[in-house]
Image (cartoon, rainbow, N blue to C red; front, side, top):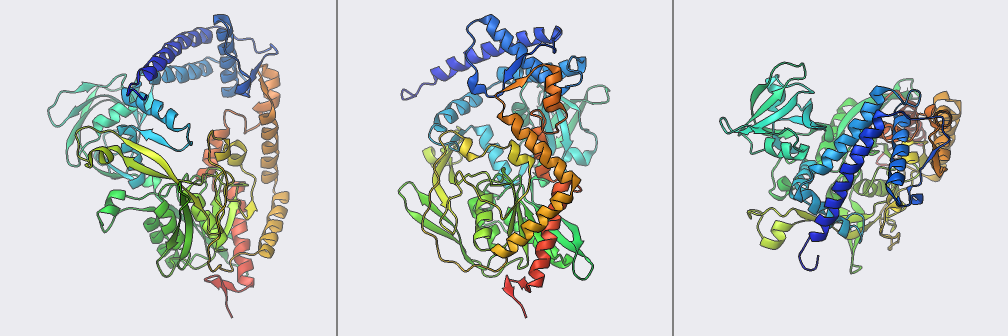
Length: 587
């Protein structure tokens, strides 16, 4: 690398691609044969126990074990089923194609990010396509036709149409339609995209607002190839923005249900370009949440619940701005650079957008900016934190360095170099503690699939250590205290004891943790079924289940039911203590 040569990266990758091709042939051959699920075989769950295969026979035997495991996890009752075999084969064919289609940009990103991650796990290189995707995630909009695509083996299909895009407005394209060719403008040559990667096809479809693009589409209903001409527009990723709903919890003292305004915040997003250029209506998470809170005021909600369970972070400034919606000025976070210089970052705006009771819901997936917000709310005793035993534990700040700007001092250079995401600071709560490694501990802990399946910052290689700085001066509210939290914990524990659904969840979690401790997993069908098949938290389903729980996709499930009950209890106890406005006692 010091000689400005990436030969070693290409050499390693070409060998890896060669091996993937060989293993793909082995897998296809194995899937055409029969497996004996009565043998007392196992596979290592702890992959650190694996040794390099000494010969081809050992390598193939290890893959035989892996395919048996894949078949068992997909269908423990009938692992020999042809549909199950096809599903496993499809998975590996898609991976093989992905490796075959790896571009020079992809390889450079993998190589340089492997290098930077040896310093800390969050410093990485973003290739031009990845940098563009990052910017889209931050501003929640892009210029295109408004279709979400998905990769299949050998082709790309439409997953869903997005509101406001030309694809949805025209009403001709449907989910599962295959895209086989793309043409620019009204008459440019149609380019065959069969076999191209999802990223390559997306790059061809996106373009400047107001321009035309043509798609060659094979409809999902089996009808003939059709050419569709669409106009690119600005498309907002509404599903990734803050959303809200009003839920009803248990009854208050007057007999009416507690009205709980729930805000689901997937990330701390901001349109950086709009912010830099002082556009009046630029999009950001704090602006969207402010608007939601104004609506909650009109709907006369009793309490606000901010759900950060799947929020992996985002803009540091947005974390400060969001905190400022709930506190009346004051320090939010401290940051320390490599020279040990500490800077205090404050909410400078007077007043609040919501002065009533607040609950913040967190999980092991809540990270970075989420932890800044949750930590400040807890330190200020501004609201009640409920969730997993700890948040993710990412307490570092990254700066995005546009390499075009850095090297050429202009974003308009003809060579797009991508960006460097560089760890430049650690952040600390107002109480002086970093969230690094340990995360933010909630006031009330609930049993959670996410926590059982998750891997926090402490499990990442080369993560920075936990430390402290001096606490800063701030005036806390009275929305929480040890006595109140003890009462809420006791009431929640009692409900969980009486809830069959919560007890079933706890038993499954206990069983899952025991299975996690096992060094090996049985490949004998009878033993596997006894250990995993009756458990909703088996290795094959735990992560999707965790993600669904984090989305709150089952609003009537036991987890959210208990959260709403806790929120209602919290409101009642504050009401009894006459702490309702700005966290201060009222007469």
